[in-house]
Length: 496
Length: 69
Image (tube, rainbow over all chains, first blue to last red; front, side, top):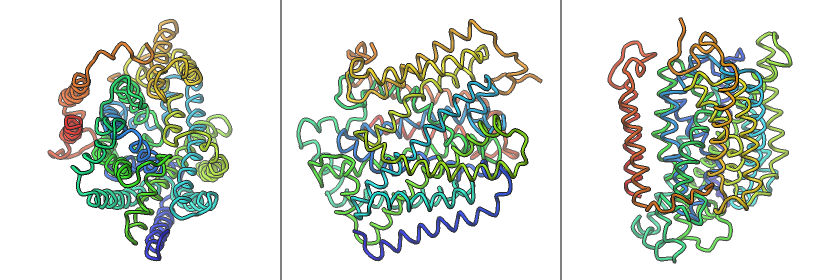
């Protein structure tokens, strides 16, 4: 249970975040200012926001739980599973997206291919974000119940109310600037926990020695690279092919919540630099989310559910005040992820569906209102559907499973779209739709097709390969767009 | 096939070299990027605007992590 000073810290954080949201409300007068902060933001704010959006409550609970079971190999997601992809995004894809002046990735796909591709991509992302919100809400509720005994629905509704308030008020500018504050709190709180934990155990060497001596199942806990026949979900082949080559790129290049931030940069250099700057901070994330799981192995051995490792550690390790700070850090992680999804879903719905198909030439004020109403609607949907995630065995793996359905196919058409001007609209549409169907089939028949516990990395890779081949073959059989139509949308293709 | 069984023969040290080699390869690609592209959007370029420096720094950090673990 938290003490009085802990409650004070948490309350100060929540009130501060709400005031920040109110402050940024005065800068929002148009849909561009709501969805893209008027394209005025600096690289450092965007970079920090990208990092904190990508790490949330889910990571604190889920990754530490995975580290408890499988060791540091789960850190691959924030190292090789992020940094190369962020550099590729910064130096190849983001400049084209930014120069195109688009609001969303589906909008880029619409210009590069056609409206069908745009619509499929937009609807896919909207559905994913909507259900992802529920998973995030449930993760919070699990922690709050363990930590404070709060009823699940009280936690969910309280979080939803606060995030909904500042996201609806201040739009993307409020989301990004609150993210900056949230990242600082997360880093301070997270590092405090890790530092105290390592000190409590007697140093890093002691931690390694104790875990290594706990039995054969802990033999590979300090190996980042796991063998192909590992019992963990992270064989090196899956990490290299599925994560590094597909999922990471799909996430950093094709994910609306990430790319939308770069699109709000004040110029092209800031857009590029935001990713490079974010990659630097990203490399510290495993220390915050992975080490608590390792510490818990020594301090709380024998936990049945690895997801309980992180909250147990807070309860047993942190003094009053710091518990509140870490609790605030956890809330920050959760809120930063939720606000990103809310704003991005509202952008996707308003720009790619509503403005395109429902009401085309309305006044800009109308789209601003639609954006705000959508934010609230999607928030309510997330709250209602949150118990769905309870049906999956591990919170983090559940999210990766959702992602793996369409990350591969989306990245295949983005990759070919940028690098091969011969890629046609029909090719991309076929690759996207059939690629998603391949993903789902692979997942449905995973017990017959794969040997590891949860093959989401392999599903990503093979669905990417399927999407790539289908797009390539169909493109060769159908008519491409002209160079004039593709100018500025394809790598090094500018027609003057 | 789907489980990459055909790569089971590769030892862990070789797998590690593949990972480290990837970072070196990316570093070389970063160094090959033209200066004009790097500074696009900057009015008065200074050394700290050189995105290559920061990108190489990121790659160096991650190289060290994978070299150690």
